[in-house]
Image 1 (cartoon, rainbow, N blue to C red):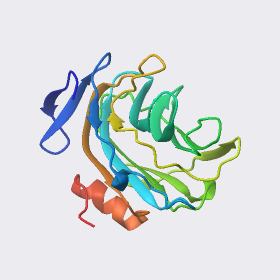
Image 2 (tube, rainbow, N blue to C red):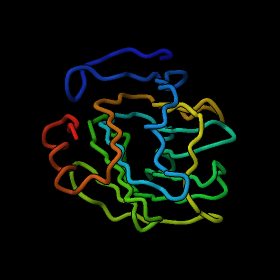
Image 3 (tube, rainbow, N blue to C red):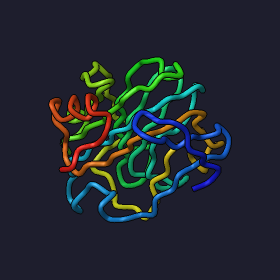
Length: 193
């Protein structure tokens, strides 16, 4: 962890990011990749966020040259991205226009059923939101890269660092249902599945 402090969070304490250098890095593990060599597998990302800036990376399993999946906020939208073969020129994007830099806690869940762009969903504060999906290049499936997962920023392309806090970050190897997402939102904490 780099330049992380801890503040009062949504539940207990939350990681606080300084907007210029703070990162949490989790080493690569096959359990953090969601493909079986032939197809994508279902997975979901859940987190509480409180932000004060307008352009940052939230979660990414990426390096500058090879990427798997990413969540970022820029230009007034939250983007959930899956990258085919590690090459960002071949990807699925799901975008939802929202104001995230309110200084208040917001709960966001991204789910994927493994079935391409129609299988991606985003939930905000327990509710499914209408978002737009786009395919760039030729998307086949994610690749199991050796990249770590990085929370709160990226170490390439100028940084994209979060100025704010993240709490209760959870990664699930299932496509969470709407009922499960609502339960996480109402409880404030992740589920044991």
